[in-house]
Amino acid sequence: MVSNPNNTQAMLAWLKDREGDMLALLERIVNIDSGSYNKAGVDKVGAELRAFLEGEGIETQIIPVEGHGDSVRAMVAAGSGQSNRPIMLLGHRDTVFPDGEAARRPFQIKDGRAYGPGVADMKAGLVMNAFVLAAFRKFGGAPGPLVGLFTGDEEIGSPTSRPIIENEARQARLVFNSEPGRASGNVVTGRKGGIFFVAEVDGVAAHSGGAFEKGRSAIEEMARKILAWHKLTDPNAGITVNVGLVSGGQSVNTVAPHARCEIDVRYVNPEDRGGILENIEAIALTCSVPDTTGRVSIKGEFKPLAQSAASQSVFEHYVANAKDVGLSIDGEFTGGCADSGFTAGVGTPTLCATGPVGGNAHSPEEYLEVASIVPRAQALVLAIARADKLGV
Ligand SMILES: [Zn+2]
Image 1 (spheres, protein in one colour):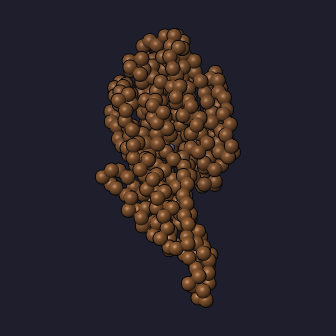
Image 2 (tube, protein in one colour; image 1 turned 30 degrees about the vertical axis):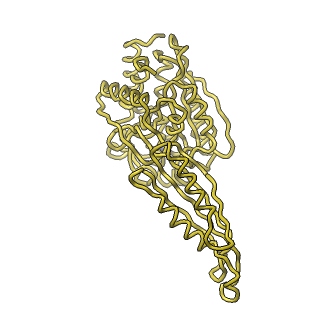
Image 3 (cartoon, helix red, strand yellow; image 1 turned 90 degrees about the vertical axis):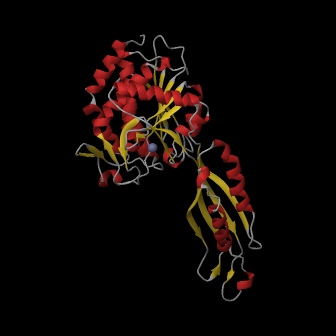
């Protein structure tokens, strides 16, 4: 089937009548606890999405991972554009919320807003992607194969799904990541990179009353390091360093033999990463309290979403198509990280936050603007159907 205006009009009309179906699927998956460490729950959300997709005649496959939710991959073949590289629709099924949250705060709609754990970040985006795939499956008109990837561990830096995302993105022509649209309705054209470190210091234990001079305090050494790390913060360069967790020691009357902390570093420019790593490591390894030793390792990482010329043209293309369904959308920069940094990092033009509009993510006040689901899906359908206009 070729991309023609009749296909796209049929898709827009079909989506217009699907708000109730979208909300029903959204309610089912919001009411499943799916924190990043709850593999069973994240996989259950995947099973719901697969059941919907397969019911629409879309083939899905599971890419298994250990410890976190499996990746679910859905594929819609194109007609005439089959030789084109795929267009990728990306989203994560995990949330930041603990088990029991869905029972405490089940899905509900009040005054045009939907609430519940992960309702905007980003279960609504998953539902939207699934219905967009279904629309193309039903009416044709995709200018190439469509790949939907539904991953399971984004909120902790995608430790297991990152290689799956990067592998898929390398083969893709462009990527739409359906993180929630900003409260303003805007999409995200730039994100900071983030590196999460674990640092440890070993000292020498001693009784702090009877043998103080024999002790070597790992906590004192860690405290000096924390000050040094925080000094690496450079607001003008967009670099921030935050030690967000600290622990250590054995008892109040023991010179601390051990200390541990976790560091969150954010940065804007991809070329700053090397220097940041060097500085963090130099501080970790250089100890000023005698006989203490330090070490540091990377626990998780997000690449920055930097705006390439190709990503800029995808953004402009999306904005123009969103306008055709009555949406007025601009681009925003955010310090928050997402999987879009990985897809942009392998060089694939990427647009982030194309999902339905919401706010207050990661908090009990998280909400979704219900009325945004259909038009955001329609905007994405148009941007995909007309992707050949892009030179990518
Ligand atoms: Zn998210």
